[in-house]
Image 1 (cartoon, rainbow, N blue to C red):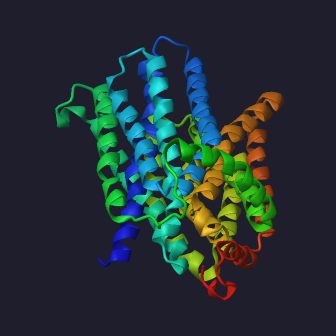
Image 2 (image 1 turned 90 degrees about the vertical axis):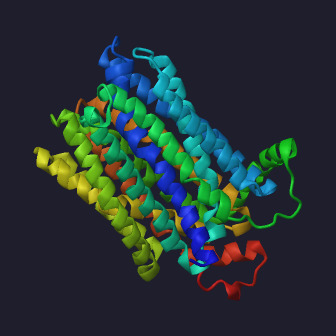
Image 3 (image 1 turned 90 degrees about the horizontal axis):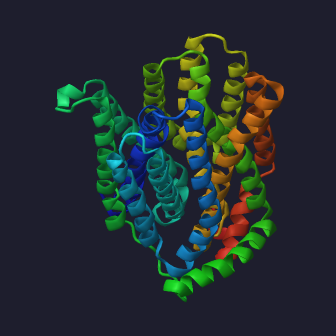
Length: 433
């Protein structure tokens, strides 16, 4: 491979690396292990509350930190260094989960929150490096490659860990609980090893007036207010972020509430794991295909297709009565989930100033995490007030419709021209950015 291909693959492999945590720990084993192993002395509803509070707390921390972290990275030219710090924390806390004794839910929750902060904080810097590794006319494809490898890598490691828990004796383990604890160590090792290529092959551009240490922190804080004002003046970016906030809220809410919804339909635990695995492996080629689709029809149209599919799935789930429908909907979501995420990232990268990618992606990640706080809460409130989980689902449909409306208002070409002007580059050079 040439130098360009090396840095693209190295960058995308970080998604392959940290998706092991996202799938195996966040979505898969931690919720089940918390309820069945660490919280055995508690009422099941209490452990559910603990898990929800942990997810919300981690998300809120990132909501506060993400813009600051992005601004600091831009001023210090140290995106990789900060990525390493946060990823290192996430890796260490994930490995430490293997040491938590049965019944010690408080320690498990504490380590999980720190691991989530490490995972999410690292993604602020990982996303902002996209502009540094991808050629202007390959942003869609490179962004999709990252998500595609994330689905594949996450699915492979999760599948291996699932088999280990189903047949622990085959690998010399005492039982399923020991297999889950070993899985936490495996995820930490996987995340560590496949982060190395990014640290070696991805280079950051030179930053003028570079600052470091506490000076970078101070500069980062001072820059936040200025960045927010700049986003407000950049109408295209502002409309995109509003639309993204709503529709990614819907995406995140479906991902977080699917397990509860399936359990409400009587689906067994093993069936949930199978559905999750199917979604992961469908997501790999679909994310890659969406990257190619984005290059041909435009990222905005590709996102609109994804929103339309999600709206259809949400509406179908309102009428769903049979278990087989859950599997069909899971597969359909697998077709568009990675695509809508990857094209959102690449479209945003096109309409922001490249020299301020860190701070702008800080706001981008902040909105994504803030949506993860509000979405499930809105569903819970509607369900509580109406007594109908089906009516609560319609809240998610509304989120997709509002998000689509704001996306419609995004003029991508105008956004790209304005971004080039702010970078001090001639507008005529802006053909493919």
